[in-house]
Length: 68
Image (cartoon, rainbow, N blue to C red; front, side, top):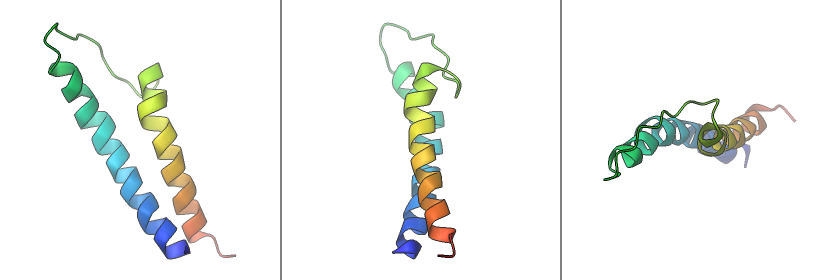
């Protein structure tokens, strides 16, 4: 169970970076009305699309490496 949590946590962490730094700006750029918004990890979008899944991934990784 801990090995599975570790592997899934690492996959989710990598997917979070891919999602936030590639797909979120790409979706904005595909907007036909011309999106000029910047996405930072400190914005509201960053809280929702980066920090929440990253903290879930970090929790899974910490659970996977714990010794108990």
